[in-house]
Length: 309
Image (cartoon, rainbow, N blue to C red; front, side):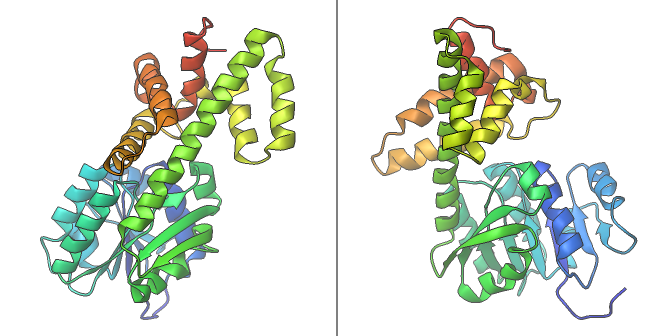
């Protein structure tokens, strides 16, 4: 193993996105020391660690262990409470000079509050939410949104483009919440895209146009995410998956954050409100297995068709 004196990194939270990001960090991040892994379910961390060569990662059983030995701590957890609990635990020890980098999707107010809390403890913070599905995390094609002090953002950049992501949106010197504000608003585009596709495919089926004909229009006019999501709808991926790519519970959390942000600033997100109502149907129909693309099933059901196509 290298004797380089590069920074010691740790990663807290190994959900769908986190696993892919860790894989690229280990394989392409030029780390001089084993990446420390922590997950609430330790077996998940051990299973992931076993996929890498000897000396590439190490697994710890507590947040305190992960933070104590690290210079840079990446976090990627499910929601605001999980992130607040993680930081509360992390700050019980001496964190002076350490850098926390959060890749979670949380409310901008939570991000700004955490930044102040971390700074008060003598540590540094960079917000780094990411855009992209788990498959993009696996292939290193995420877009990383960075906000914080320019010097600290520069410490994070070597692990973004060409490692975990394909590009960055740089908000150096802007409030930390700028990054999660971008993430929350950006996610409404994804939510609205799925809603639009779901309504379009349902109307195409009921009107006699046919979903195949509509898909030909979509892939010609809107290549990329629209075409990928259109395929997931018409092929039934929205209800056949054992594990969701964008879980309905997380999608609704993001929708609530967007609507809360909008209400604060006197804006009405009617498209998001409609999509969230359909996500509620998905929750009831599929439970924790529900995916954001289940909106298609909800629109179908609302239109007199079966949830499953």
